[in-house]
Image (cartoon, rainbow, N blue to C red; front, top):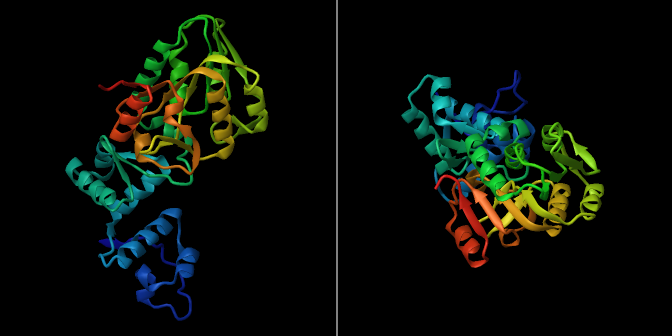
Length: 314
């Protein structure tokens, strides 16, 4: 059975004057009616997608029940993988690939190796879900970054799941001074006597343990360190580094300004995403470590701006 995208949950009683046609066809409803009855952000995004198709004279997209559930999973988990979905729905991987191809062709999801991700534009994926996205790639990136940092170094480590992987890879280092606004990194490193952990002041963000705000910025400005390890929620084709929280961005900018060597760590899914707040530009870093640089223009910028590009999957 197919559902018109977006998928509505029928109400027990229909509003007076509402027909079956207006309940099942989103194009027959007004924008305000749709907002009032939409069950999720996905429904609203899907409505805009259908309206855009309709304005262009194209046919609207229809979702199967399985595709609608895949879309919900991608929204809540940040990503979906072909093999996991095939097991979940008891279908072949080829069937799931076709579902994902349909959703990606409609620009509702973005392709990644082995699956797809939800292209968050205004709000980031939940932190625990982000830890699972490209986890092996992040571990490899973390090891590559740790190899660049010698013993007896001072460094900043910023908020992020990939920067956490760098922290994990530093556990065998000696006589490090690590300044961080990432409570998860501080908790992991604090038990190692050869690593001095300095944590910034500021507001603790409950969603991910990040410390943000002007107090964190002012604290960071007291230091000039050897290295900074930073991440980004998205990397645009023009080399812009993007994030979601302007308070976090201010901290990241202070970190970049107060380090002699900036290492950007980011897995390749960040090339598929967008975010609204600009951290800076990739030309401001000295080293960029990723599993695969899938944007040729970013590769070109790195070459032109003398940014060392390290690809762990190559």
